[in-house]
Image (cartoon, rainbow, N blue to C red; front, side, top):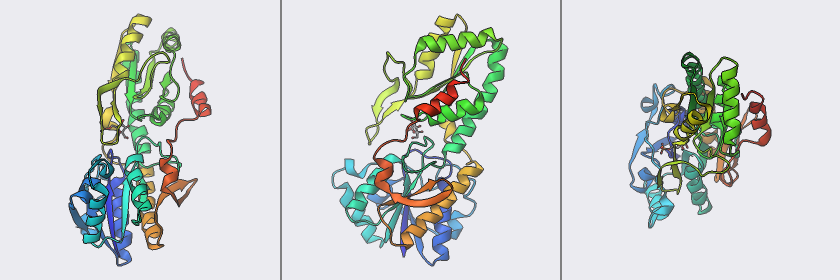
Length: 340
Ligand code: F6P
């Protein structure tokens, strides 16, 4: 059998661990793996490389993706899906394993509906895919953000200033929630709950009164109850997503004025996505890769491997892409206990 693999969307720690696991397990079974470069672009343009054991040696701890990635959407291009089918037929690919988030897997689901054999692997630092308890990459991103918050506490306290930490997550507040809770933030603002500026000011003042300086963690998609989403450029990608960023600086300016204390914004940005995966992400990514090969070998299609509790199981891709997994009210309420 010949299996194709690609990594699409934003990169994320653990992608190489999936590639390694798919190649290791397939090779053991006597199957071949072809890696397409830069997500769907590589399939559209037939840009691929044969992945053997030597190609995946040393990949487990390496961040990013050796295959490269892109946000190419075959369905946004004239004849795109036909070009995908033609490449796969020409290369004799029996099944495709796309590793990606809602966009990459959305394309995968449509191709599977059209008859292609596809087994998806979920990845995103945002942890917003609905059908899986966790995506790999999230744990690493939270660890990076937590370490930043730990460091910001000491410098903030020394200068008696508010520090606003802007984290990624797009429309889901998981990174902000987990990093804020792990790092002991004094306020956590997420997209799911438009925030009240007066309440944020009150929490900051309360923190200053206790002799310490406030750390405000704000998710890039968070917005005030009476305001709009802040976007960095207004540009959209091939899947129609606006580029977020800037809410941290906007909030810091308001907090400085309203509290009468200096406030600075720190944007963690792509630092959260880069570098070596955590142990949790290496194990999850490896298990996902192994399970994807098992699903292919079992003749499954239109499924995605997912973490349910401690088990990795196949679920319909459509279950993961139908809606985003957002932070529930009760999880935010847990964080709120520590505000101020
Ligand atoms: O989906 C992952 C993610 O890192 C989001 O958290 C963020 O909004 C987006 O990708 C950033 O994308 P880009 O790398 O294209 O700036």
